Length: 460
Ligand code: ARG
Image (cartoon, rainbow, N blue to C red; front, side, top):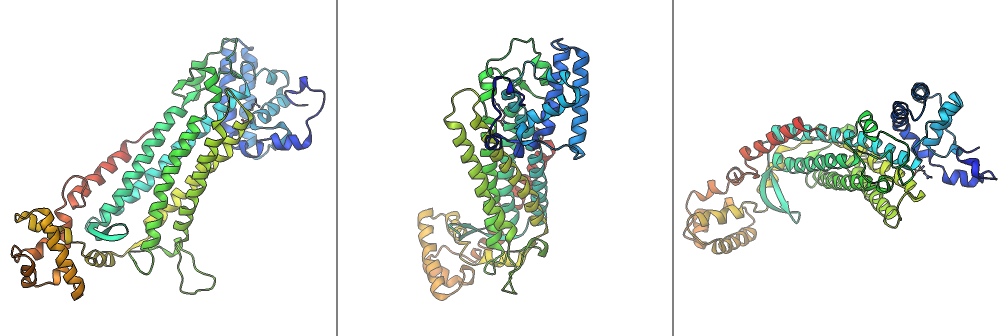
């Protein structure tokens, strides 16, 4: 018979049992469910709501059940519906009446809210520690390649020279923001809902603060209806993870471009590439492509979660069981992508010479040549026009700005002098951009140090 079978005259249809059951995907919350129940039982005993000795027996037996589950000795039952009732059934099978007292002053509605919050809190910590490992790789690569000049792009057209370190540290900013967002979300996840009951709280003198302390939550929920209805923390996490996947996907896209024959800025390690079944020469950046592709799953999870929640009246509705597979998938996907991305990055070969050569083509120093004229007193708009003419002339001639003779420069503007050549060298272009946040060595070093501090001080 079902734990709630008293009111029923008939068994549930087998098809409905299968349909209703969530054990297939919520079994992964067994540890949170058991830990939550242990805290609830301890509190019931402390408050003399149940006999303190029975409370102790419940806690002890739950501990044994946890060990058995971890040792693979327990098989969950589909017709016990979900992880909450499976654990309760295991408990009552072992200690009978005492086990049946555990659910006093509690509903599965506040229980599932508790479990999922606890589960996500652990995952949030895990994700930020993976992000931290990724940032470590980024900062150490940036330190190593602080002088490596490469072309920067806008519209994927060569724009101005920057350094590889500067480019890497741009991504570091994104991942630091991701960590901040997830830490922020953690504080809204870390709110203890037990005591909300089914929706209207309970008449038993529960000590909610005590349970909060036992389970390491920061606060208790302030409204019993909201306590069982709220899934904002899951929506928020899915949104944060979607943004994180946007970052991984954009980075992957660049790595895919950069490892093409046309760019050849980087070469993936053999261990992080795959071959073709027909073309013997191929070395494909599958890992980066898959990460770019997997971003779609996480965005889908976010859309799915928003859609499940948007029309629900307060408080709990069974629709909310659909939250789990989606938020779990988002978390699993991110936890799958982050470590492999980090290792791919730390093992890839960086072709400094190709990057440098790339920085030289495409008139990436034209802005600096115009700035040169401005420093000599010309208005920027005029300087822009003069450089436009020189670029056009060079394209016709098939050469770079630095290949023009001083006579050629002077033909367009008499202001040019011999020092134009050093003013438009790639090194000058990068080094002169020395404002905070710029690509020159000193400025980039500062951001690297800031990022290293961030990693060191980060905690949830
Ligand atoms: N398996 C359910 C879920 O995941 C647990 C809560 C069930 N509560 C209820 N009143 N049916 O949402």
